[in-house]
Length: 173
Image 1 (cartoon, rainbow, N blue to C red):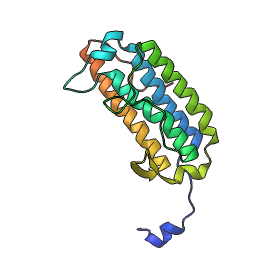
Image 2: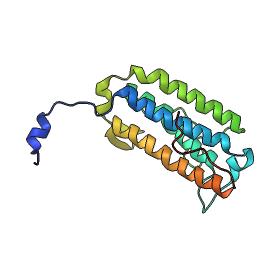
Image 3: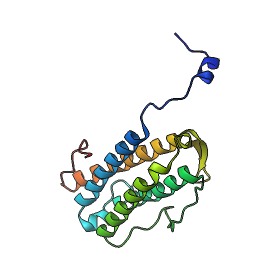
């Protein structure tokens, strides 16, 4: 049976997934991406590429450049970024993989600290993320997760091409 538009507009909004479950889901993906970063040899992390794709360090910086300012944007509506974007539109990677991991961990702590401050109605608020992407904040969060999965998949291909067994894709805990 099809619900008409008027009925949809009057339905009470409800969460399909609780906020804390969404955070745990995202952090599970972030933990797996961290394991992938750890699996990369230092030099290949910064230089290995296939088919013109960016090295994994560049992909990781994109994930980082989106995560922290997105949390601030969803919480406050301020989508400005304090990142120093390089020529590819994202911050240049720190000099060592360990520094990248430290930045990754710091971003994880920021996400965990800011998440509980987000009021439930902020997830449904329509905002202009980074002044470019008009969507609900929960859709922007889902995009961040999808984007990370996409780039992590590229990292899996890189590791396999280097003859390195990547972490199991389901190992998110």
